[in-house]
Length: 335
Image 1 (cartoon, rainbow, N blue to C red):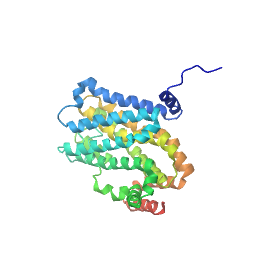
Image 2: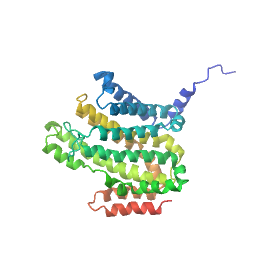
Image 3: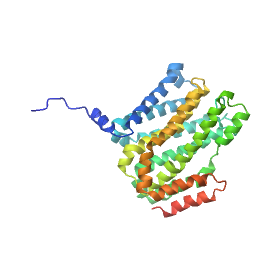
Image 4: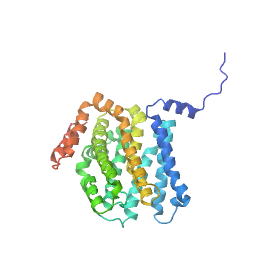
């Protein structure tokens, strides 16, 4: 018998196909979170929150970033090919880059101090913290470009060599040009100078310890280890579509939405426990991708898993020479 049912709309078909991904529920959840972060200030302060004349370019940049980030999640769940064709993830990275640059320019009044201001309920972000974030924005832009346009990089020698230096030696060559903040110094300074309330000191101590563990994971395993595997061709286009894009969107959010959550705390629009807990939840959501990371670094490229994992204990040493030698070795043996 002839099937008289109307054809399923293309969007619904693509969404049904996307929901087969083990991470699709995370994409839908992050889309809801993005919409909530966009709407919450409007509910509290009205639409003028985004359009006040003071720091207008930074506000509009933040609004554009949140809209783009939320729409990227929507497209990833419904039409990942369109997301790749439109390069919206790169646009999102560049908007985060602009946000950081506009903060450096417009917030010149921020003080230089040991306490970065992020791991406290009373502190204000330090200028060092904002400048340091500018370095990590470079990493996000480069990582996505490498994931999507690796073949383009390898086909152009003038691009290949600078890109290879950045892929393996960015923390040795580029990182020294940016300030370095420390959660241990923040713990000490925040408590000595009263940037942390007495009742929240334990909460922030645990939170900063969790952040240190996350930082080692994201820097050496998801960052340098996976970047080396991508550079040497151990990932494919299907990896990019199914899990590398959502993981990258999470990393973008940890760096940029995390700072916006701090702004909500600073303006007393949200409780510090809620904002900092939300930040840690975004950061630790990256561990949901551990099965996919293991598939690449353990089963496909076990030597590059050692490259990432060995970097963790070396990172804890005062002497940086062994760590730099590890990175140099990765640079020399790579294609």
